[in-house]
Length: 415
Ligand code: GCU
Ligand code: CA
Image (cartoon, rainbow, N blue to C red; front, side):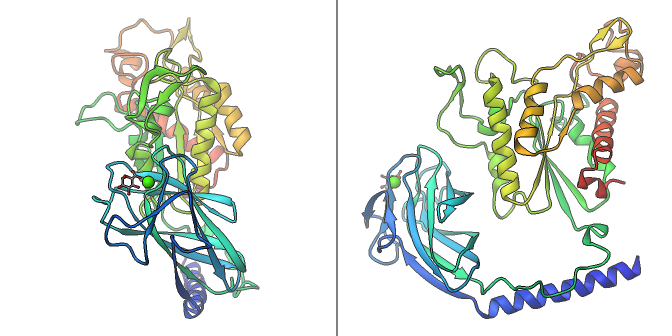
């Protein structure tokens, strides 16, 4: 153990040397939004004080109404972009940052309090040698905030070849700290207001990991994947395609928190996603169709991957349903969860099957309907879906075991 620590220290020292070398060649250049070759899909205005140069880009309030800059890099590497903007509304304005038209990275421009209050937000992107277009393309109907300028810090050439010998043993044997982010419904959520019941399995998950893992449980009772993502903006109205209308198309605070570039998902983190219980409801706002459910899983997986985090999909945990002496499956969206896993190269934990297999191992069937006594009473609250803490702890254990059995790298952190 001691030897490993010394080796890790040596690697860290070399890494610091490299960072120091790149800082030495860093250069910061300001690109005004009103100066060509920058473009603005709207008007160049000057009616809100505090901007630099002769104005700012007031892009149209529409999806895709972009502000674009042309940034020159002396060599391929990374660039830190500081965008100065003002958002005088009370709603965040999310956008994609595209470099040379590709590799969209999400950024969100939060309210700044007033149109005259200008704030700088940074994002790091890869750049090629020479001219690069940096495009801020809004993803919701609110469009962009007003954009003043882009300040770009380029680091020098990416060191090549690799400046130090590969560490031995590999870093995975002494892993750093990671956060496990949880998105799901009541069966995963922390108990609310100190209530003993219901207790979701997410609240019992941390005990299976060593102290390098922080579990951030953002599961919320009653949510479908769509209401979890877009609360409180999913309406009770269906569109022509039979999906619930979202207006405005703005992410929930809980998803924005996970996307936040400073305090959200980081490289090496994990995002576990379990929905499909409330999604089958016929009426909006909970209703989610089969294709839409898969699309939203894919969107969440891409956002996690764009931040270097690892998504994991879970099929919905089973309720207790007995067919005589056997616990049987009883949830929808199983096929959809598996296909979304295949389509997005995301591991799927079949918690649906694993949970009713556990109920069989615990001999919870046959069941006489009394939730106040016996092994079912100790496992479930007063209905077939929600868990007592003891039940939640066992379900969390099933998920932890699946992570090990499926050789998902997060297993390194299990106790
Ligand atoms: C107001 C404000 C503009 C801003 C616009 C918006 O009209 O004066 O500067 O661009 O709101 O909502 O985008
Ligand atoms: Ca505008």
